Amino acid sequence: EPEVTQTPSHQVTQMGQEVILRCVPISNHLYFYWYRQILGQKVEFLVSFYNNEISEKSEIFDDQFSVERPDGSNFTLKIRSTKLEDSAMYFCAGKEGRNYEQYFGPGTRLTVT
Amino acid sequence: DQQVKQNSPSLSVQEGRISILNCDYTNSMFDYFLWYKKYPAEGPTFLISISSIKDKNEDGRFTVFLNKSAKHLSLHIVPSQPGDSAVYFCAASEDKIIFGKGTRLHILP
Image (tube, rainbow over all chains, first blue to last red; front, side, top):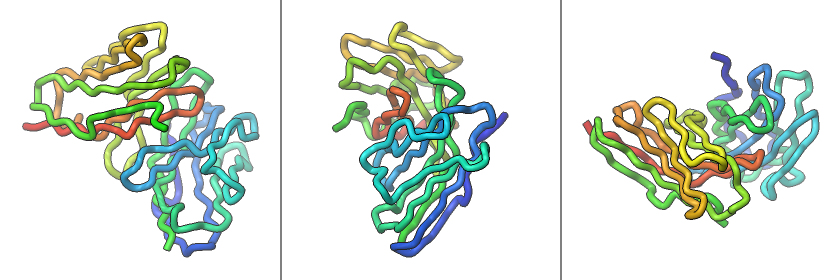
């Protein structure tokens, strides 16, 4: 069964450094998302991406965040200058069509020190 | 603001019995609801969904009930099995998914 994959599984970085989190969605998916879950809190929406552009972003997704799908397979989330409060699990998700369920990757644990 | 609320942080159920997980929502415009299951160190796994035009959807041991007038949905698992021990998230979809805080289900032997 096809799966969403994410790399790395764990990323440790120093405050102020740039990180890129990578996702390979399921091949027939057209809608892509990033979510995050800070320890002990609920899963929160960050951004949605369709047809090579951002469809919607939350207020968490400020100028420090960006997404791209450079080669038609990878879907990346970049944080330009990480802050301590960016420490969280980051989940990529995708779906086939508008009224379909989303399938999630296993997550990347980002630790900012 | 919590648009999707799961008021029970945890629930313990004997193996073989029925597990009932509850969820309330505030936005009457939501028209598609989902339940996800999550194990530690894994991403949420889709379990079952329901459209607002229905009041029940069943898939094997899992049934979701929707009461639109009460803005309430519930997930029934019967019979409960040890592998069902996980965190269950209720969610509403308006393209993006809005998650509740989750209920940790413990299935007792």
